[in-house]
Amino acid sequence: MKYLAAIAAGAIGLAGAYAGTVLLLEAQFPQHLPAPSITRIKHLDEKLLYLRERGPVEPALLAVGSSITWRQMDGDAFAELAGGADRVFNGATAFLQAHQTRFLTEFYLDHFSGVETVLVMVALPDFSDCTGIDSVLMDTADAVSYAFEGKDDLGFYFKYFTPLMYLKRGISMAEQRQPLTGEVYLDEYGSSPIDLLPGTTPSLRYGELPVDDACIAELAKLSAEIDGMGKEMALVFAPVHPAYWESFPAAREAWRAVAERITEAVAPHGTRVLDLAESPAFKAEDFFDAFHLRWPSVARFSTMTADWMRDRHHIARAPAERPTGMPATAKDQPRRRPPGVPASGAFRRTSVE
Image (tube, rainbow, N blue to C red; front, side, top):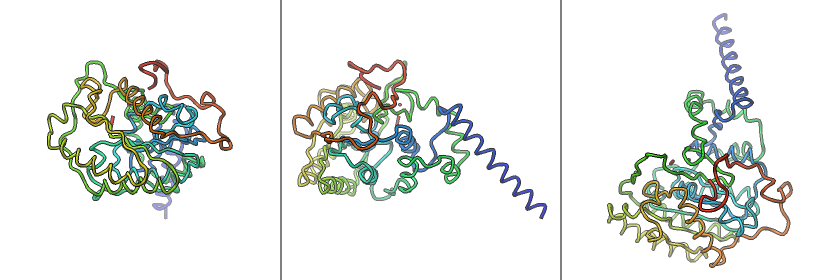
């Protein structure tokens, strides 16, 4: 009995120390406290934390996808289309395949009632494996409770009890949240732009990538679902580093075939496609790696995309009345742009999958 009592006392003490550490970090050093591990991807955990901290979010323009969308969207460029900066939300995250993008989009659309346009940016990495990788990213009930309902976060740190993981993440979390260099940094739109550190030599970072036909089918299903809800889907084939196409000519031909199949598959659902995968407007110096633009070029890419959406009537219109609790203007929202990141011009706003 004494042995069991000692074990119980030790467990209680450990739990108390764990809770105390979480509460201390939350109160005094929040920049070092990782979000609870509710999802399978730490970058998505941070997105749920963003939604929790930001308060009521009701976008008219919802961007979704992998890091192709997450890192390459300057929300300023889309503010006018959406009816205000507070009506734009980048819900994308790192490492997603097309079927996981579909899962995440369905999650958002279940909880955002005012979405009119869904913007999806894709490239080859999104189509590698939709057969062997699970599409389910999280327990959606827990995600809703944490991100949208503001339930006590200490309970989630205990439910998803991974102290060693939290310790590992916490050591570098403040650095990971730094703009333009931090792996999980999020700006006020939920985007995670990135740029090269001074003295860093860029590289393609990717080799030749396979294409899983199931991913094409999943993207077509997403297009059909969005159309069935009476919303628009705008699909963008994002720019690719010209040296990648030169290094992997077979991938270039494979992508052209994939792009044609995707365009045909989504057309019946009213989804229009902007193809910039081989655009001469983007040079080697614009890229961080084969598939991600550096921040200065993201602003230009976003402006091109927004202009195309405007011209093609993919316009997300703000509702006549804002949902209860929504601030009247973007300036009333908590701002997440850190000091030193400009808000206008070529570097309008500002982390690496």
